[in-house]
Length: 431
Image (cartoon, rainbow, N blue to C red; front, top):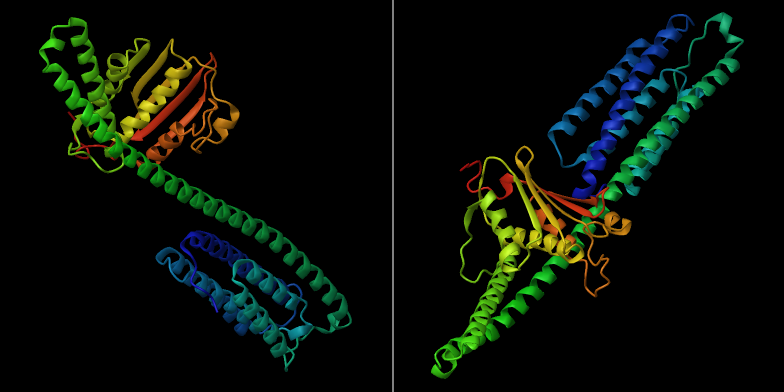
């Protein structure tokens, strides 16, 4: 009757069960208050024993549901369906001893059916309809009539109308409150499902990009090795060694080849195919300083302003993917603001806060709204817009966060928040 729920809807079922528990406590309180009023000021004799037994059953159902909700994660839809069926049974029992179908509160079965239709699967919802119709048929068979005092017997129809009015108001209020909460739960569930689908699509995109990068890096390995051999052969030729300018050019060529090999190694390592180089143990301060020095020295950038406010250093594992995405952020900043780029490393509790700022045109609102989505770029290049996409996804894998915005004085600002435990070596070690 009820299919096993998918993991992504379990949280919505739990919220619905918690809401039903609250409504059931309200029902218990309302029934006790009704018994006190009817049995007291109105002086109508009620069979207290069966009515209180039904209320005790509702209390037991609530306590059992609370236990299931706190201790179990599987079978919650079965528990929800069972609790609603017990609600129908308890209402049938109470109405049987208070006039049956002549009781205006018999309309409360409609509330049970609507709630079942909102929180259960179609098969279980139709089972609720069948149970409610069966309960109404049972109530038509020899119910216990209410014994009205003589002074109220002439007002029986008026009392029925008053009870119907109260019942309608109760159903209307509870349905609005319940439907509003259920609709919010459904919207949250749909948003969670959309986020899961988006993340799956992004991860698939990253895998394909990794395969492409890995294949390109492997293909580049052979010509780079050939160039390295040719440069060494040129160095071994005496007639070339005699030319001073050519010797300097050969040095530049060798440095460029080694630089390309380093880039290829970094790509392969990021794709999980390291070229024999073991992961390095370093410190956070040294890791960041190496990135900054690479841009200042290797790439000839002398307009980079670096402020180290990290505080006590931490031993970490040098993550090539992290190094690459930080480099992408700096590269984007340099491209739009070659005259100045600022980097600030600070410590926020047990996390690194790395901020990269520039004096360029800043981000458009479309980029900020779609932060982390691929192919969103202001440069107009085919295939562009992957830098922030990769940064957001690498940070998400490491448990971090990326924030982007525009500065009041002009330019863009990208802040990376990364928990130190994600790259600590070993966890908690300080140097």
